[in-house]
Length: 311
Image (spheres, helix red, strand yellow):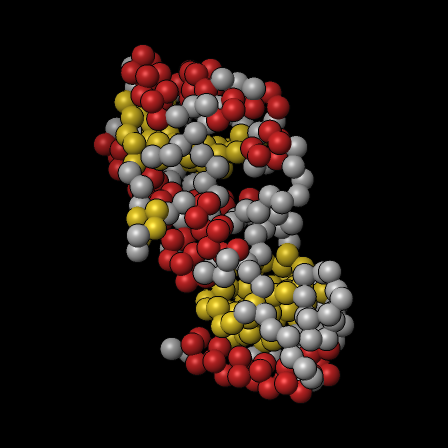
């Protein structure tokens, strides 16, 4: 896959089949769009082109710098799109100028005139352009008047759920990890850096690594305990992940923490990069009367996590 930043220098020698979106999560619904994109590109003897945006449009449109919870970092999104086998990824810088383009101008000026699209693939709920006013009907009208063809990909449904980035975010925020992973089509993960903590886990026999996520807008799943795979220095370990406020030992802390106990590992790893792959949710965050009770529950969590991860 060739990655293009902006469209000014982009040129194609074959017919272009294109799809447009933020594509947060690269979930099963997005993959259905990309599969159709590749199929039509092959029929046109052309090239499949995915157009996306950076930063996330909501940051520019609303001016929000906080409370933007995304399923992928930009690097993760590029990697996941590349894995689908499309030919080109065009990343447009989303700024105020671009945000003010009407849907018709965006479609005609960029998609049709500049990129030379011959066919467009759109998701069933696709919106774009100023005030997100561009929709499927607008695409159909402008496509017809521009002499290009289009497909609308129907929603993907799994277990009575319509797959979407919003639905997946809601599932993760509410602790429904199995549901989120099912809609993603792969286990949710977070990449971060190991930082120094209070070393409380070490005092009760379960040393943990404190994680600072590398991407500040990355969605952190609901507070609780998870069975995870820990990728450290290209080696994968089993682990138990705790997300929350450590209420047993630090009842007044306002800081939400990510800590992981890594099975069969010892060593000083401060500053190392780590990837946490969320496989199973074990339980909600709990408050214990004593650290002894906490240690006993951690041992139960460890045994349960290993049982699940080794299946």
